[in-house]
Length: 563
Ligand SMILES: Cc1cc2nc3c(=O)[nH]c(=O)nc-3n(C[C@H](O)[C@H](O)[C@H](O)COP(=O)(O)OP(=O)(O)OC[C@H]3O[C@@H](n4cnc5c(N)ncnc54)[C@H](O)[C@@H]3O)c2cc1C
Image 1 (tube, rainbow, N blue to C red):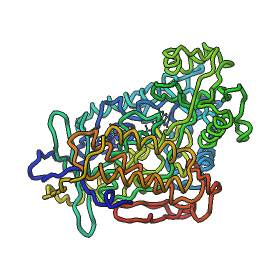
Image 2 (image 1 turned 45 degrees about the horizontal axis):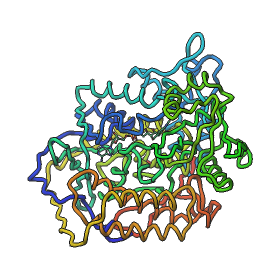
Image 3 (image 1 turned 90 degrees about the vertical axis):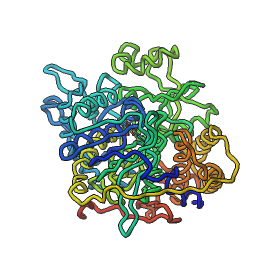
Image 4 (image 1 turned 45 degrees about the vertical axis):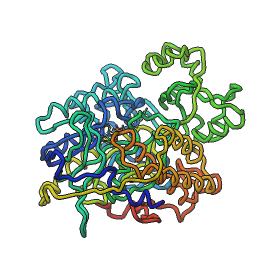
Protein backbone atom coordinates (compact mmCIF):
# COMPACT_ATOMS: atom_id res chain seq x y z
CA UNK A 1 0.00 0.00 0.00
CA UNK A 2 1.40 3.38 -0.91
CA UNK A 3 1.87 6.12 1.65
CA UNK A 4 -1.07 8.03 0.06
CA UNK A 5 -3.53 5.36 1.14
CA UNK A 6 -1.91 5.00 4.52
CA UNK A 7 -1.49 8.65 5.43
CA UNK A 8 -4.92 10.07 4.74
CA UNK A 9 -6.90 10.10 7.98
CA UNK A 10 -9.74 12.38 6.87
CA UNK A 11 -10.92 13.25 3.35
CA UNK A 12 -11.18 16.98 4.07
CA UNK A 13 -9.54 19.53 6.33
CA UNK A 14 -11.80 20.83 9.13
CA UNK A 15 -11.99 22.18 12.65
CA UNK A 16 -15.00 20.76 14.46
CA UNK A 17 -15.31 23.88 16.59
CA UNK A 18 -16.18 25.83 13.44
CA UNK A 19 -18.89 23.44 12.19
CA UNK A 20 -22.56 23.06 13.16
CA UNK A 21 -22.90 20.25 15.70
CA UNK A 22 -25.72 17.76 16.29
CA UNK A 23 -25.96 15.35 19.22
CA UNK A 24 -27.48 11.91 19.43
CA UNK A 25 -27.04 8.73 21.41
CA UNK A 26 -26.89 6.40 18.41
CA UNK A 27 -25.93 7.32 14.86
CA UNK A 28 -26.85 4.80 12.16
CA UNK A 29 -25.18 5.35 8.79
CA UNK A 30 -27.27 3.81 5.99
CA UNK A 31 -30.94 3.03 5.51
CA UNK A 32 -30.93 -0.41 3.89
CA UNK A 33 -32.22 -3.46 5.74
CA UNK A 34 -29.31 -3.49 8.22
CA UNK A 35 -29.49 0.23 9.05
CA UNK A 36 -33.26 0.30 9.44
CA UNK A 37 -33.35 -2.85 11.57
CA UNK A 38 -30.52 -1.46 13.70
CA UNK A 39 -32.31 1.87 14.11
CA UNK A 40 -35.53 0.17 15.25
CA UNK A 41 -33.60 -1.89 17.80
CA UNK A 42 -31.55 1.07 19.06
CA UNK A 43 -34.71 3.18 19.39
CA UNK A 44 -35.73 0.71 22.11
CA UNK A 45 -33.13 2.30 24.40
CA UNK A 46 -31.81 5.51 22.82
CA UNK A 47 -32.38 8.51 20.58
CA UNK A 48 -31.31 7.64 17.06
CA UNK A 49 -30.29 9.55 13.95
CA UNK A 50 -30.20 7.68 10.63
CA UNK A 51 -28.32 9.21 7.70
CA UNK A 52 -28.43 7.98 4.11
CA UNK A 53 -26.65 9.44 1.15
CA UNK A 54 -29.57 8.92 -1.21
CA UNK A 55 -33.31 8.24 -1.20
CA UNK A 56 -34.74 4.93 0.04
CA UNK A 57 -34.51 3.44 -3.47
CA UNK A 58 -30.76 4.03 -3.51
CA UNK A 59 -29.74 0.91 -1.62
CA UNK A 60 -28.95 -2.68 -2.51
CA UNK A 61 -31.85 -3.68 -0.28
CA UNK A 62 -34.40 -1.96 -2.49
CA UNK A 63 -33.19 -3.88 -5.56
CA UNK A 64 -33.11 -7.36 -3.98
CA UNK A 65 -35.23 -9.69 -6.04
CA UNK A 66 -35.11 -13.37 -5.15
CA UNK A 67 -35.89 -13.28 -1.47
CA UNK A 68 -35.00 -14.12 2.09
CA UNK A 69 -33.72 -17.55 3.09
CA UNK A 70 -35.25 -18.86 6.31
CA UNK A 71 -36.19 -22.16 7.90
CA UNK A 72 -39.88 -21.84 8.65
CA UNK A 73 -42.14 -23.88 10.92
CA UNK A 74 -45.23 -25.57 9.37
CA UNK A 75 -47.58 -22.90 10.79
CA UNK A 76 -45.92 -20.32 8.50
CA UNK A 77 -44.91 -22.50 5.56
CA UNK A 78 -47.70 -25.11 5.35
CA UNK A 79 -48.30 -28.44 7.03
CA UNK A 80 -46.19 -30.41 4.50
CA UNK A 81 -43.13 -28.21 4.83
CA UNK A 82 -40.18 -30.02 6.38
CA UNK A 83 -36.99 -28.00 6.74
CA UNK A 84 -34.37 -27.88 9.50
CA UNK A 85 -31.79 -25.48 10.88
CA UNK A 86 -29.15 -28.18 10.32
CA UNK A 87 -29.95 -28.31 6.60
CA UNK A 88 -29.71 -24.52 6.15
CA UNK A 89 -26.50 -24.47 8.19
CA UNK A 90 -25.02 -27.28 6.08
CA UNK A 91 -25.94 -25.53 2.81
CA UNK A 92 -24.41 -22.23 4.00
CA UNK A 93 -21.19 -23.94 5.10
CA UNK A 94 -20.97 -26.05 1.93
CA UNK A 95 -21.23 -22.91 -0.22
CA UNK A 96 -18.72 -21.03 1.96
CA UNK A 97 -15.48 -22.61 0.73
CA UNK A 98 -14.46 -23.88 4.17
CA UNK A 99 -14.15 -20.34 5.54
CA UNK A 100 -17.49 -19.84 7.33
CA UNK A 101 -17.49 -19.05 11.02
CA UNK A 102 -19.80 -21.84 12.29
CA UNK A 103 -21.05 -19.67 15.18
CA UNK A 104 -22.09 -16.87 12.85
CA UNK A 105 -23.88 -19.36 10.61
CA UNK A 106 -25.80 -20.93 13.46
CA UNK A 107 -26.68 -17.53 14.93
CA UNK A 108 -28.17 -16.26 11.67
CA UNK A 109 -29.93 -19.46 10.63
CA UNK A 110 -31.53 -20.00 14.03
CA UNK A 111 -32.72 -16.38 14.11
CA UNK A 112 -34.45 -16.84 10.72
CA UNK A 113 -38.02 -17.56 11.95
CA UNK A 114 -37.88 -14.62 14.39
CA UNK A 115 -36.65 -12.27 11.64
CA UNK A 116 -39.56 -13.34 9.42
CA UNK A 117 -42.02 -12.72 12.26
CA UNK A 118 -40.52 -9.24 12.71
CA UNK A 119 -41.09 -8.53 9.02
CA UNK A 120 -44.68 -9.69 9.27
CA UNK A 121 -45.09 -7.44 12.34
CA UNK A 122 -43.99 -4.38 10.35
CA UNK A 123 -46.56 -5.33 7.68
CA UNK A 124 -44.27 -6.56 4.96
CA UNK A 125 -46.52 -8.36 2.52
CA UNK A 126 -44.94 -11.69 1.61
CA UNK A 127 -46.20 -13.89 -1.22
CA UNK A 128 -48.56 -16.64 -0.10
CA UNK A 129 -49.91 -19.77 -1.72
CA UNK A 130 -52.20 -22.77 -0.97
CA UNK A 131 -55.50 -23.19 0.82
CA UNK A 132 -55.35 -22.26 3.65
CA UNK A 133 -52.71 -19.76 2.48
CA UNK A 134 -49.16 -20.08 3.81
CA UNK A 135 -45.91 -18.36 2.84
CA UNK A 136 -44.77 -19.29 -0.67
CA UNK A 137 -41.21 -20.62 -0.83
CA UNK A 138 -38.88 -20.62 -3.84
CA UNK A 139 -35.64 -22.50 -4.38
CA UNK A 140 -32.24 -21.04 -5.29
CA UNK A 141 -28.78 -22.39 -6.13
CA UNK A 142 -26.97 -24.16 -3.28
CA UNK A 143 -30.12 -24.65 -1.15
CA UNK A 144 -31.15 -28.27 -0.73
CA UNK A 145 -34.84 -27.37 -0.74
CA UNK A 146 -37.28 -24.52 -1.28
CA UNK A 147 -36.81 -22.05 1.62
CA UNK A 148 -36.75 -18.60 -0.02
CA UNK A 149 -39.57 -16.23 0.92
CA UNK A 150 -40.40 -13.53 -1.59
CA UNK A 151 -42.70 -10.58 -2.16
CA UNK A 152 -44.50 -9.45 -5.31
CA UNK A 153 -42.74 -12.27 -7.15
CA UNK A 154 -39.33 -10.71 -7.68
CA UNK A 155 -39.59 -7.41 -5.77
CA UNK A 156 -38.71 -8.67 -2.29
CA UNK A 157 -36.29 -5.84 -1.49
CA UNK A 158 -38.75 -3.11 -2.38
CA UNK A 159 -41.44 -4.62 -0.12
CA UNK A 160 -38.97 -5.14 2.71
CA UNK A 161 -37.44 -1.66 2.48
CA UNK A 162 -40.90 -0.09 2.29
CA UNK A 163 -42.16 -1.89 5.40
CA UNK A 164 -39.05 -1.23 7.52
CA UNK A 165 -38.96 2.39 6.37
CA UNK A 166 -42.56 3.02 7.45
CA UNK A 167 -41.87 1.50 10.87
CA UNK A 168 -38.61 3.42 11.30
CA UNK A 169 -40.08 6.81 10.34
CA UNK A 170 -43.09 6.27 12.56
CA UNK A 171 -40.84 5.76 15.61
CA UNK A 172 -40.69 8.86 17.77
CA UNK A 173 -37.08 8.26 18.80
CA UNK A 174 -35.73 8.05 15.24
CA UNK A 175 -34.78 11.07 13.11
CA UNK A 176 -33.90 10.35 9.47
CA UNK A 177 -31.54 12.62 7.50
CA UNK A 178 -31.93 11.77 3.80
CA UNK A 179 -29.36 12.91 1.23
CA UNK A 180 -26.84 13.27 4.05
CA UNK A 181 -23.46 11.96 2.91
CA UNK A 182 -21.07 10.76 5.60
CA UNK A 183 -17.46 11.55 4.75
CA UNK A 184 -15.64 10.22 7.77
CA UNK A 185 -15.94 8.76 11.21
CA UNK A 186 -14.53 10.99 13.93
CA UNK A 187 -12.22 9.30 16.38
CA UNK A 188 -10.63 10.22 19.65
CA UNK A 189 -7.05 9.05 19.53
CA UNK A 190 -5.32 7.64 22.60
CA UNK A 191 -4.46 4.30 24.15
CA UNK A 192 -7.88 2.97 23.09
CA UNK A 193 -9.08 4.98 20.08
CA UNK A 194 -12.82 5.53 20.06
CA UNK A 195 -15.37 6.45 17.42
CA UNK A 196 -17.43 9.43 18.63
CA UNK A 197 -19.51 10.29 15.58
CA UNK A 198 -19.13 11.40 12.00
CA UNK A 199 -18.64 14.34 9.70
CA UNK A 200 -21.41 14.72 7.14
CA UNK A 201 -22.33 16.80 4.12
CA UNK A 202 -25.86 17.77 3.17
CA UNK A 203 -26.57 19.69 -0.06
CA UNK A 204 -28.65 22.26 1.88
CA UNK A 205 -26.85 22.41 5.24
CA UNK A 206 -23.26 21.79 4.13
CA UNK A 207 -20.77 20.18 6.50
CA UNK A 208 -21.96 19.13 9.95
CA UNK A 209 -20.64 17.08 12.84
CA UNK A 210 -22.91 14.46 14.39
CA UNK A 211 -21.67 13.40 17.84
CA UNK A 212 -22.82 9.97 18.96
CA UNK A 213 -22.06 7.66 21.85
CA UNK A 214 -22.36 4.71 19.43
CA UNK A 215 -22.10 4.66 15.65
CA UNK A 216 -23.51 1.82 13.54
CA UNK A 217 -22.12 1.51 10.04
CA UNK A 218 -24.68 0.02 7.62
CA UNK A 219 -23.48 1.49 4.34
CA UNK A 220 -23.76 -1.67 2.23
CA UNK A 221 -21.35 -2.93 -0.40
CA UNK A 222 -18.98 -1.68 -3.07
CA UNK A 223 -20.02 -3.31 -6.36
CA UNK A 224 -19.42 0.01 -8.16
CA UNK A 225 -15.70 -0.58 -7.85
CA UNK A 226 -16.26 -2.96 -10.82
CA UNK A 227 -17.28 -1.94 -14.33
CA UNK A 228 -19.88 -4.72 -14.49
CA UNK A 229 -22.05 -4.63 -11.40
CA UNK A 230 -25.59 -5.33 -10.27
CA UNK A 231 -25.29 -2.68 -7.53
CA UNK A 232 -26.86 0.80 -7.71
CA UNK A 233 -24.61 3.84 -8.08
CA UNK A 234 -24.45 4.47 -4.32
CA UNK A 235 -22.49 1.25 -3.70
CA UNK A 236 -19.04 2.87 -3.75
CA UNK A 237 -17.73 1.33 -0.54
CA UNK A 238 -17.74 4.62 1.43
CA UNK A 239 -18.34 2.88 4.76
CA UNK A 240 -15.52 0.42 4.21
CA UNK A 241 -13.09 3.17 3.25
CA UNK A 242 -14.05 5.45 6.16
CA UNK A 243 -13.74 2.57 8.64
CA UNK A 244 -10.27 1.82 7.26
CA UNK A 245 -9.22 5.47 7.57
CA UNK A 246 -10.53 5.49 11.15
CA UNK A 247 -8.39 2.47 12.06
CA UNK A 248 -10.95 -0.39 12.13
CA UNK A 249 -9.86 -3.74 10.69
CA UNK A 250 -11.35 -4.88 7.36
CA UNK A 251 -11.44 -8.62 6.64
CA UNK A 252 -11.57 -10.99 3.63
CA UNK A 253 -11.76 -8.31 0.95
CA UNK A 254 -10.61 -10.70 -1.80
CA UNK A 255 -14.06 -12.24 -1.73
CA UNK A 256 -16.29 -10.30 -4.10
CA UNK A 257 -19.18 -12.45 -5.23
CA UNK A 258 -19.94 -12.31 -8.95
CA UNK A 259 -23.54 -12.98 -9.88
CA UNK A 260 -23.72 -15.28 -12.88
CA UNK A 261 -26.80 -13.83 -14.53
CA UNK A 262 -27.21 -10.14 -15.31
CA UNK A 263 -29.02 -8.98 -18.41
CA UNK A 264 -26.40 -8.20 -21.03
CA UNK A 265 -27.58 -5.64 -23.57
CA UNK A 266 -24.92 -3.35 -25.04
CA UNK A 267 -25.28 0.19 -23.71
CA UNK A 268 -27.87 -0.70 -21.03
CA UNK A 269 -27.11 -0.80 -17.32
CA UNK A 270 -26.67 -4.29 -15.89
CA UNK A 271 -29.86 -5.60 -14.33
CA UNK A 272 -29.95 -8.71 -12.26
CA UNK A 273 -31.86 -11.78 -13.40
CA UNK A 274 -32.46 -13.49 -10.09
CA UNK A 275 -31.16 -16.98 -9.42
CA UNK A 276 -34.75 -17.94 -8.63
CA UNK A 277 -35.30 -18.06 -12.41
CA UNK A 278 -32.97 -21.07 -12.54
CA UNK A 279 -34.77 -22.36 -9.44
CA UNK A 280 -37.96 -22.31 -11.52
CA UNK A 281 -36.29 -24.33 -14.29
CA UNK A 282 -34.38 -21.77 -16.40
CA UNK A 283 -31.21 -23.28 -17.92
CA UNK A 284 -27.99 -21.81 -19.28
CA UNK A 285 -27.10 -22.35 -22.94
CA UNK A 286 -24.17 -21.01 -24.93
CA UNK A 287 -24.19 -19.26 -28.27
CA UNK A 288 -24.58 -22.62 -30.04
CA UNK A 289 -27.61 -23.56 -27.93
CA UNK A 290 -25.56 -26.09 -25.92
CA UNK A 291 -26.60 -26.70 -22.25
CA UNK A 292 -23.18 -26.56 -20.68
CA UNK A 293 -23.59 -26.47 -16.88
CA UNK A 294 -23.65 -30.28 -16.44
CA UNK A 295 -20.05 -30.29 -17.80
CA UNK A 296 -18.95 -28.18 -14.82
CA UNK A 297 -20.84 -29.33 -11.72
CA UNK A 298 -23.14 -32.19 -10.63
CA UNK A 299 -25.80 -29.64 -9.57
CA UNK A 300 -25.64 -28.22 -13.12
CA UNK A 301 -27.66 -24.98 -13.36
CA UNK A 302 -28.22 -24.90 -9.59
CA UNK A 303 -24.53 -25.11 -8.69
CA UNK A 304 -23.13 -22.46 -6.31
CA UNK A 305 -22.68 -18.98 -7.79
CA UNK A 306 -18.89 -19.00 -8.06
CA UNK A 307 -18.99 -22.24 -10.05
CA UNK A 308 -21.70 -20.94 -12.40
CA UNK A 309 -19.97 -17.54 -12.90
CA UNK A 310 -16.64 -19.23 -13.78
CA UNK A 311 -18.35 -21.78 -16.03
CA UNK A 312 -20.04 -18.95 -17.95
CA UNK A 313 -16.70 -17.15 -18.34
CA UNK A 314 -15.03 -20.33 -19.65
CA UNK A 315 -17.90 -21.07 -22.01
CA UNK A 316 -17.79 -17.50 -23.35
CA UNK A 317 -14.06 -17.92 -24.00
CA UNK A 318 -14.62 -21.31 -25.68
CA UNK A 319 -17.33 -19.99 -27.97
CA UNK A 320 -15.62 -16.63 -28.44
CA UNK A 321 -18.75 -14.68 -27.50
CA UNK A 322 -19.32 -11.99 -24.88
CA UNK A 323 -22.49 -13.56 -23.44
CA UNK A 324 -24.43 -16.77 -22.90
CA UNK A 325 -28.20 -17.18 -22.55
CA UNK A 326 -30.75 -18.09 -19.92
CA UNK A 327 -33.30 -20.27 -21.65
CA UNK A 328 -36.77 -20.04 -20.10
CA UNK A 329 -38.79 -20.96 -23.16
CA UNK A 330 -40.06 -24.17 -21.54
CA UNK A 331 -41.33 -22.18 -18.51
CA UNK A 332 -43.67 -20.32 -20.86
CA UNK A 333 -44.30 -16.58 -21.11
CA UNK A 334 -47.39 -16.60 -18.95
CA UNK A 335 -45.87 -18.45 -15.98
CA UNK A 336 -42.69 -16.38 -16.25
CA UNK A 337 -44.65 -13.12 -16.16
CA UNK A 338 -46.64 -14.32 -13.18
CA UNK A 339 -43.65 -15.46 -11.12
CA UNK A 340 -41.18 -12.72 -12.19
CA UNK A 341 -43.30 -9.65 -13.02
CA UNK A 342 -40.44 -7.14 -12.55
CA UNK A 343 -38.00 -9.02 -14.79
CA UNK A 344 -40.73 -9.63 -17.34
CA UNK A 345 -41.40 -5.91 -17.52
CA UNK A 346 -37.70 -5.16 -17.84
CA UNK A 347 -37.33 -7.67 -20.70
CA UNK A 348 -40.28 -6.13 -22.50
CA UNK A 349 -38.41 -2.83 -22.61
CA UNK A 350 -35.80 -4.61 -24.71
CA UNK A 351 -38.44 -6.50 -26.71
CA UNK A 352 -37.35 -9.87 -25.30
CA UNK A 353 -40.15 -12.40 -24.82
CA UNK A 354 -38.77 -15.12 -22.48
CA UNK A 355 -41.41 -17.52 -23.85
CA UNK A 356 -39.78 -17.47 -27.29
CA UNK A 357 -36.29 -15.95 -26.90
CA UNK A 358 -33.40 -16.96 -24.61
CA UNK A 359 -32.27 -14.06 -22.37
CA UNK A 360 -28.71 -12.75 -23.03
CA UNK A 361 -26.74 -12.74 -19.79
CA UNK A 362 -23.24 -12.17 -18.42
CA UNK A 363 -21.75 -12.25 -14.86
CA UNK A 364 -21.23 -9.06 -12.81
CA UNK A 365 -19.88 -8.01 -9.40
CA UNK A 366 -22.70 -8.44 -6.93
CA UNK A 367 -21.91 -8.79 -3.24
CA UNK A 368 -18.92 -7.87 -1.05
CA UNK A 369 -18.40 -10.81 1.30
CA UNK A 370 -15.53 -9.16 3.14
CA UNK A 371 -15.97 -6.02 5.20
CA UNK A 372 -15.55 -4.40 8.59
CA UNK A 373 -14.46 -7.23 10.87
CA UNK A 374 -17.04 -7.71 13.63
CA UNK A 375 -17.88 -10.07 16.42
CA UNK A 376 -21.28 -11.76 16.66
CA UNK A 377 -22.91 -8.64 18.10
CA UNK A 378 -21.65 -6.31 15.40
CA UNK A 379 -18.78 -4.77 17.41
CA UNK A 380 -15.91 -3.68 15.14
CA UNK A 381 -12.30 -3.55 16.33
CA UNK A 382 -12.74 0.20 16.97
CA UNK A 383 -14.46 1.09 20.23
CA UNK A 384 -17.83 2.77 19.71
CA UNK A 385 -18.13 1.56 16.11
CA UNK A 386 -20.51 -1.25 15.11
CA UNK A 387 -21.18 -2.63 11.64
CA UNK A 388 -24.03 -4.67 10.18
CA UNK A 389 -25.21 -5.88 6.79
CA UNK A 390 -23.09 -6.01 3.65
CA UNK A 391 -20.51 -3.55 5.01
CA UNK A 392 -19.65 -6.03 7.78
CA UNK A 393 -17.72 -9.28 7.72
CA UNK A 394 -19.13 -11.58 10.38
CA UNK A 395 -17.82 -14.83 8.88
CA UNK A 396 -21.33 -15.97 7.93
CA UNK A 397 -20.60 -16.27 4.22
CA UNK A 398 -17.06 -17.63 4.48
CA UNK A 399 -15.57 -17.37 0.99
CA UNK A 400 -18.87 -17.53 -0.88
CA UNK A 401 -22.34 -16.31 0.08
CA UNK A 402 -25.26 -18.69 -0.22
CA UNK A 403 -28.10 -17.11 -2.20
CA UNK A 404 -30.62 -15.03 -0.22
CA UNK A 405 -28.67 -15.20 3.04
CA UNK A 406 -27.81 -11.49 3.09
CA UNK A 407 -31.20 -9.91 3.70
CA UNK A 408 -31.53 -12.32 6.60
CA UNK A 409 -28.04 -11.38 7.81
CA UNK A 410 -28.99 -7.67 7.69
CA UNK A 411 -32.07 -8.34 9.83
CA UNK A 412 -30.22 -10.45 12.39
CA UNK A 413 -27.02 -8.44 12.83
CA UNK A 414 -28.79 -5.10 12.35
CA UNK A 415 -30.90 -5.97 15.36
CA UNK A 416 -27.91 -7.29 17.33
CA UNK A 417 -25.83 -4.14 16.74
CA UNK A 418 -28.81 -1.91 17.54
CA UNK A 419 -29.37 -3.68 20.83
CA UNK A 420 -25.79 -4.14 22.01
CA UNK A 421 -24.64 -0.57 21.26
CA UNK A 422 -26.50 0.40 24.41
CA UNK A 423 -23.25 -0.47 26.17
CA UNK A 424 -21.73 2.77 24.79
CA UNK A 425 -24.71 4.82 25.87
CA UNK A 426 -24.23 3.48 29.38
CA UNK A 427 -20.48 4.19 29.29
CA UNK A 428 -19.26 7.73 29.87
CA UNK A 429 -19.28 9.58 26.56
CA UNK A 430 -16.39 12.01 26.09
CA UNK A 431 -18.74 14.62 24.54
CA UNK A 432 -17.68 17.16 21.94
CA UNK A 433 -13.94 17.28 21.61
CA UNK A 434 -11.52 19.38 19.63
CA UNK A 435 -10.69 17.51 16.44
CA UNK A 436 -8.63 19.18 13.74
CA UNK A 437 -7.83 17.81 10.32
CA UNK A 438 -5.09 19.61 8.42
CA UNK A 439 -4.31 18.55 4.86
CA UNK A 440 -1.57 20.32 2.90
CA UNK A 441 -2.51 21.69 -0.53
CA UNK A 442 -1.19 19.33 -3.21
CA UNK A 443 1.26 20.68 -5.79
CA UNK A 444 0.68 17.71 -8.13
CA UNK A 445 -1.37 18.20 -11.28
CA UNK A 446 -4.95 16.92 -11.38
CA UNK A 447 -6.21 13.76 -13.05
CA UNK A 448 -9.63 13.80 -14.66
CA UNK A 449 -11.97 12.35 -12.02
CA UNK A 450 -14.37 10.80 -14.52
CA UNK A 451 -11.43 9.09 -16.24
CA UNK A 452 -10.06 7.76 -12.95
CA UNK A 453 -13.47 6.42 -11.93
CA UNK A 454 -14.02 4.62 -15.21
CA UNK A 455 -10.42 3.35 -15.54
CA UNK A 456 -10.33 1.89 -12.04
CA UNK A 457 -13.65 0.12 -12.63
CA UNK A 458 -12.40 -1.37 -15.92
CA UNK A 459 -9.13 -2.54 -14.43
CA UNK A 460 -10.73 -4.25 -11.44
CA UNK A 461 -13.22 -5.98 -13.74
CA UNK A 462 -10.47 -7.23 -16.07
CA UNK A 463 -7.83 -8.22 -13.54
CA UNK A 464 -9.40 -8.42 -10.08
CA UNK A 465 -12.57 -10.09 -11.35
CA UNK A 466 -13.72 -13.68 -11.71
CA UNK A 467 -10.21 -14.92 -12.60
CA UNK A 468 -7.02 -13.40 -11.19
CA UNK A 469 -3.25 -13.95 -11.47
CA UNK A 470 -0.48 -12.73 -9.17
CA UNK A 471 1.34 -10.91 -11.99
CA UNK A 472 -1.75 -8.94 -13.09
CA UNK A 473 -2.67 -8.11 -9.50
CA UNK A 474 0.80 -6.59 -9.04
CA UNK A 475 0.27 -4.44 -12.13
CA UNK A 476 -3.10 -3.31 -10.80
CA UNK A 477 -1.50 -2.31 -7.51
CA UNK A 478 0.96 -0.15 -9.46
CA UNK A 479 -1.95 1.52 -11.25
CA UNK A 480 -3.79 2.19 -7.97
CA UNK A 481 -0.57 3.57 -6.58
CA UNK A 482 -0.34 6.02 -9.49
CA UNK A 483 -4.01 7.09 -9.37
CA UNK A 484 -3.79 7.33 -5.60
CA UNK A 485 -0.85 9.72 -5.76
CA UNK A 486 -2.77 12.11 -7.99
CA UNK A 487 -6.25 11.73 -6.48
CA UNK A 488 -5.87 10.93 -2.79
CA UNK A 489 -3.62 13.93 -2.28
CA UNK A 490 -6.41 16.31 -3.36
CA UNK A 491 -9.17 18.00 -1.38
CA UNK A 492 -12.58 17.72 -3.03
CA UNK A 493 -15.73 19.55 -2.08
CA UNK A 494 -18.38 17.23 -3.49
CA UNK A 495 -19.39 13.60 -3.30
CA UNK A 496 -18.14 12.69 -6.78
CA UNK A 497 -14.60 13.35 -5.60
CA UNK A 498 -15.07 11.69 -2.20
CA UNK A 499 -16.57 8.61 -3.82
CA UNK A 500 -13.65 8.21 -6.21
CA UNK A 501 -11.25 8.55 -3.28
CA UNK A 502 -13.17 5.82 -1.45
CA UNK A 503 -13.31 3.58 -4.53
CA UNK A 504 -9.55 3.92 -5.01
CA UNK A 505 -8.91 2.96 -1.41
CA UNK A 506 -11.25 -0.02 -1.67
CA UNK A 507 -10.01 -1.15 -5.07
CA UNK A 508 -6.44 -1.14 -3.77
CA UNK A 509 -7.41 -3.07 -0.63
CA UNK A 510 -9.38 -5.71 -2.59
CA UNK A 511 -6.37 -6.13 -4.89
CA UNK A 512 -3.98 -6.42 -1.96
CA UNK A 513 -6.10 -9.08 -0.33
CA UNK A 514 -6.43 -11.00 -3.62
CA UNK A 515 -2.67 -10.75 -4.13
CA UNK A 516 -1.94 -11.99 -0.60
CA UNK A 517 -4.28 -14.99 -0.97
CA UNK A 518 -2.10 -17.32 -3.07
CA UNK A 519 -4.83 -19.92 -3.42
CA UNK A 520 -8.32 -20.35 -4.86
CA UNK A 521 -11.29 -20.52 -2.56
CA UNK A 522 -14.96 -19.62 -2.98
CA UNK A 523 -15.37 -16.52 -5.11
CA UNK A 524 -11.61 -15.88 -5.26
CA UNK A 525 -10.04 -17.77 -8.16
CA UNK A 526 -6.31 -17.49 -8.86
CA UNK A 527 -5.39 -19.06 -12.19
CA UNK A 528 -1.79 -19.37 -10.91
CA UNK A 529 -2.92 -21.08 -7.67
CA UNK A 530 -6.09 -22.97 -8.64
CA UNK A 531 -6.50 -25.05 -5.43
CA UNK A 532 -7.43 -24.11 -1.85
CA UNK A 533 -4.50 -24.34 0.58
CA UNK A 534 -4.78 -25.13 4.27
CA UNK A 535 -2.46 -22.31 5.28
CA UNK A 536 -4.93 -19.77 3.85
CA UNK A 537 -7.92 -21.20 5.68
CA UNK A 538 -8.06 -18.01 7.74
CA UNK A 539 -9.36 -14.47 7.60
CA UNK A 540 -6.99 -11.72 6.44
CA UNK A 541 -7.43 -8.46 8.36
CA UNK A 542 -6.19 -5.12 6.99
CA UNK A 543 -5.63 -2.02 9.08
CA UNK A 544 -4.37 1.39 8.03
CA UNK A 545 -0.67 1.74 8.61
CA UNK A 546 0.06 -1.99 8.51
CA UNK A 547 1.65 -3.23 5.28
CA UNK A 548 0.81 -6.89 5.88
CA UNK A 549 -2.47 -8.42 7.02
CA UNK A 550 -3.02 -9.88 10.43
CA UNK A 551 -4.58 -13.34 10.12
CA UNK A 552 -7.28 -14.94 12.25
CA UNK A 553 -8.10 -18.64 12.39
CA UNK A 554 -11.61 -19.93 11.73
CA UNK A 555 -13.03 -20.96 15.11
CA UNK A 556 -13.92 -24.58 15.64
CA UNK A 557 -17.64 -25.25 16.03
CA UNK A 558 -17.13 -26.49 19.61
CA UNK A 559 -15.07 -23.45 20.69
CA UNK A 560 -16.83 -20.62 22.54
CA UNK A 561 -18.03 -17.88 20.12
CA UNK A 562 -16.24 -14.51 20.18
CA UNK A 563 -18.16 -11.46 21.33
C1 LIG B 1 -29.81 -6.39 -7.64
C2 LIG B 1 -29.60 -7.08 -6.32
C3 LIG B 1 -30.39 -8.17 -5.96
C4 LIG B 1 -30.20 -8.80 -4.72
N1 LIG B 1 -31.04 -9.83 -4.36
C5 LIG B 1 -30.92 -10.36 -3.12
C6 LIG B 1 -31.85 -11.34 -2.65
O1 LIG B 1 -32.78 -11.69 -3.35
N2 LIG B 1 -31.67 -11.85 -1.39
C7 LIG B 1 -30.65 -11.46 -0.58
O2 LIG B 1 -30.54 -11.95 0.55
N3 LIG B 1 -29.77 -10.52 -1.00
C8 LIG B 1 -29.89 -9.96 -2.23
N4 LIG B 1 -29.01 -9.00 -2.63
C9 LIG B 1 -28.01 -8.53 -1.68
C10 LIG B 1 -28.70 -7.65 -0.64
O3 LIG B 1 -29.68 -6.87 -1.28
C11 LIG B 1 -27.73 -6.73 0.06
O4 LIG B 1 -26.61 -7.43 0.50
C12 LIG B 1 -28.39 -6.09 1.28
O5 LIG B 1 -29.60 -5.49 0.89
C13 LIG B 1 -27.46 -5.07 1.88
O6 LIG B 1 -28.18 -4.35 2.85
P1 LIG B 1 -27.44 -3.23 3.70
O7 LIG B 1 -28.46 -2.67 4.60
O8 LIG B 1 -26.21 -3.78 4.25
O9 LIG B 1 -26.98 -2.16 2.59
P2 LIG B 1 -27.82 -1.35 1.52
O10 LIG B 1 -29.19 -1.87 1.36
O11 LIG B 1 -27.00 -1.27 0.28
O12 LIG B 1 -27.93 0.10 2.15
C14 LIG B 1 -26.81 0.94 2.25
C15 LIG B 1 -27.24 2.28 2.78
O13 LIG B 1 -26.08 3.04 3.11
C16 LIG B 1 -26.21 4.34 2.60
N5 LIG B 1 -24.86 4.89 2.39
C17 LIG B 1 -23.84 4.37 1.69
N6 LIG B 1 -22.76 5.17 1.74
C18 LIG B 1 -23.11 6.23 2.50
C19 LIG B 1 -22.45 7.42 2.90
N7 LIG B 1 -21.20 7.72 2.54
N8 LIG B 1 -23.13 8.29 3.68
C20 LIG B 1 -24.44 8.06 4.06
N9 LIG B 1 -25.10 6.95 3.70
C21 LIG B 1 -24.45 6.05 2.93
C22 LIG B 1 -27.03 4.19 1.34
O14 LIG B 1 -27.64 5.43 0.97
C23 LIG B 1 -28.04 3.14 1.80
O15 LIG B 1 -29.08 3.75 2.50
C24 LIG B 1 -29.18 -8.35 -3.87
C25 LIG B 1 -28.38 -7.28 -4.23
C26 LIG B 1 -28.59 -6.63 -5.43
C27 LIG B 1 -27.72 -5.47 -5.81
